[in-house]
Length: 47
Image (spheres, rainbow, N blue to C red):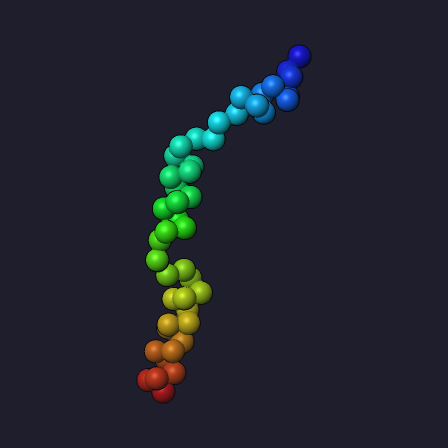
């Protein structure tokens, strides 16, 4: 039978996941909301 408490104690997160999380959090990329706001502002300025 599986001892879940023991398995949880042995668990170590993947380094790839940690690296991905850091890369996402440290990124200054625009998300879809930022892009839509920018497009709407450009549209308003032209009309």
